[in-house]
Amino acid sequence: MDLPDESLEDDARRLGHLRIAGVDEVGRGPLAGPVTAAAVVMVPGRVPPGLNDSKKLNPTRRAALAVEIGAVCEVAIAHASVAEIDEMNILRASHLAMLRAIALLDPAPDFLLIDGHLVPRGLSTPARAVIGGDARSVSIAAASIMAKTCRDAIMVDLAQQHPGYGWETNAGYPSKSHKSALRDLGITPHHRRSFKPVHNILYQDKSLSD
Image (cartoon, rainbow, N blue to C red; front, top):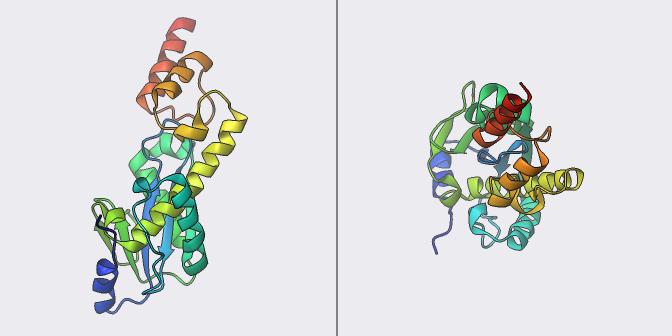
């Protein structure tokens, strides 16, 4: 199995950059909860063994790697709220969370490796968008792990406040049981009203009450 490596970080270092941050987000697909981004600056050569794209790790391994990453890397995590997602769309909200995470790094990075097709608008730091970056760059992979670990914990907490939707296991993604609970239990303040399954239920409820 091919693992992420430091090739992209090394490319940036050859250009003279010293503080390189990998940036990734999680939570674009769920029907509920915030979108969460992490920015991670790694020390060259100090890569936790087995570091990989968070989607390819089981929860136990991901949690263990998050502890290791936190011990040897600089990490910043930030969010965009459900209200912001509904207001500006999920892509722009994801980029807002990324910008917030980057801004929390002190001192600021001088180069960014950003997972995805696009660099967020308004970014003043030199950056490279990397398609499939969490499978290619150790910094982006580390960011994906930190963002997912944090967001999953948020959803477990929200599941205790709003039982029945299965957020402790589905993290707000549109699983069959989650969509069924939406129909049976209704919509919470943490559901994204701009997302079609939620919007459709709201529209149906409104039609029935009219």
